Structures are given as C-alpha cells and as structure tokens.
Length: 257
Image (cartoon, rainbow, N blue to C red; front, side, top):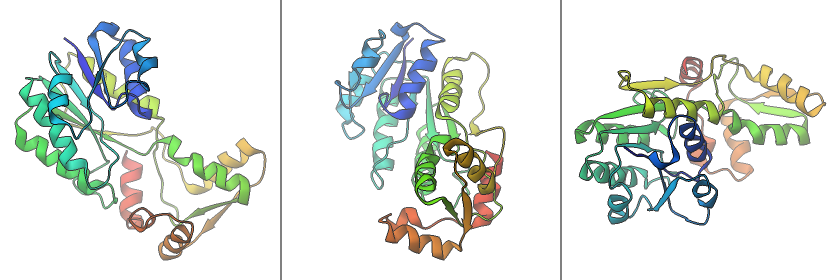
C-alpha cells in the first residue's frame, strides 16, 4: 500500500522520498506537493505526484486516496500551521489511513522554543483524533548553521548567548532516514521518537569546525541573551525568532536530542 509524503519537494521531504526509494518500489510512494513543476525530479524517479496544499481539504482528500501511511511534514506558515496540519489529519482519517507520522519539535510538550507551541497543538489534535500516529520530534539540523559559517567567514566571529550549552544536531538526511524506517518497518513503533545527533557539541567546537572549513581563525563572541536579541533585531530578524528560550532549557533539551 502506498506511503504518502507531504511537502515532498522541501529540504526534508525530498530526502525522505529518496530514503523510501531505498526500501520500497517507487510505485508505493506518493509525493504530495503544492507545485507540480518543482516535483518533476521526483516524478522522474517513478514516484506518483499529487497536488494539494495544506489549506485545501478537498485536494488533500483526493491526494490521500488509496494511501496506507502518511508522513505529515510540518508546514512553515507560522500562525497557520495548526489549522493546516488538522486538514491533513482529517483527510487521512477520511481516507482510512492506518498510520500518520508527524515531524514535531524536540520535547514539544515542555519546550520553551518559539516553534514549540504550534507543534504541541498539532500533537494534541492528533491525540484527540483517534488516528494511529507517531511523533517524530526532529532535533536541530546541521544545515541550520550554514548562515553561521557564512557570517563567521565575513566577520571572523561566531555570535552566541548559549554559554557552554550543547546541541546534538543531525543532518537532514539522517532524520529523513529515520522517518523512512518508521514508515516501512513492521516492528512495533514507539508513540514518540526524540531524534537528534549522537554527539552534543558546544559553540567553541562549532567555531573550531568553521575555522577548519574556511581556513581562517574564528572566535566565539559570548553575549547576554538580551544583547543577542538586540543584535539580531538590528540585523532584521523578527522578534519572535530573535528571542531565545532560557539557556538551561535549550541546553538540557539540545543535549538530549
């Protein structure tokens, strides 16, 4: 029975499709996308492409016809996501999907990260819906630090208010692999998977790694959370993203991912 991957042309979704192709025939994969043109590389691999946005319940119903399992990759429209995710969940229920996996945030039920509340709202909706589901609480991606590499290359400085906090990030491809395993395994599944890297690292270690990559020295500039917020806002970062959670919460959760 087919496995549907939503947001299949995104950074994570396209990697999940590739990971699934290593496990099941292309005929058993459905890529749910908003833009057919962007999905052409996926279609070229023999994967069926169906068009639906998270806002279009009718299209989602049609996209999930005949599907057995669904990976709901969280949307990126802040403020709209709980409603959009609920549309996918409702469509999955209407089509008698046997399992829905959702990419949530680390420790979403206790986290102070700005992204956590909407993820938690979706988790609660899933719990109340009655559909069989698995929460994939993806940790921070390695790729999220590419802007830090670019900034450090220009300034020679890595700005942080994390102190000695540690982050156990992972490559998107690794977390895509985890999703593919969950979607294709016959083994019993956990209700929640907290996913992250094997090694937790500090900002000093990140600076050393960046220095090695760019061939120039990079120093760590430790500032207070308030100072970092001010610096980021001056650089044009919206306040909801510039304001960090408390250091202890971030460090504890980051090191457990």
